[in-house]
Amino acid sequence: MRVEQISVLLRNEPGVLKKILESISEGNINILGLTINETASLGELRLVVSDTKKTSEILKKMDLSHNVVKIIVVDLKDKPGELLEIARLLSENDINIDYIYTLASGKNSAFIAIKTWDMAATEEILLANKIKIVTLEDFAK
Image (cartoon, rainbow, N blue to C red; front, top):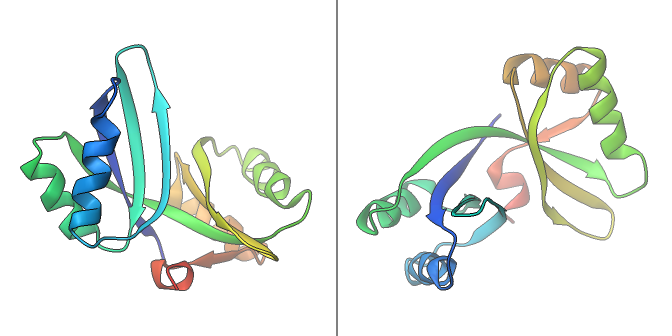
C-alpha cells in the first residue's frame, strides 16, 4: 500500500528547480505532491509523480542524484485534530516520524505523506485505528 516518492539532492541556487520541473513537464508527468527542504548549499526535493520510473530516467539524464523511497499516504478528514491523532498514535508506540507533508487537500479531505523509521509498524497502527491508507491511484484522480 505504500506510494513511491523520489528524493532529489539539488544545489540551492536559482534556476535548478525550474530545470527539473521543465524536464518533468516535457515528459508529460503530473506532479501530485512536492516538498523542498534546504540547507545552506543543498536542498532535498521530494516528489510524488504520476510516473516514477519515467521521472527517474529524466533525472538520470540530468545527472541528478536521486533515490526512490516508499511512503505511506493517508486520507484524513479535513478538520482540526486529525493529524494530531496520527502523531499521538505513533508517539505512543515509540515510532519516530522522519517527515510528513501534505500532498493535496480538498473540501473534505487531505492526503498526507508520512515517512517513519518503522514503516511496517506504522501501517499496522494506522490500519488498526481505522486510518485510511491510500494508493497512488486513489489520489491521482
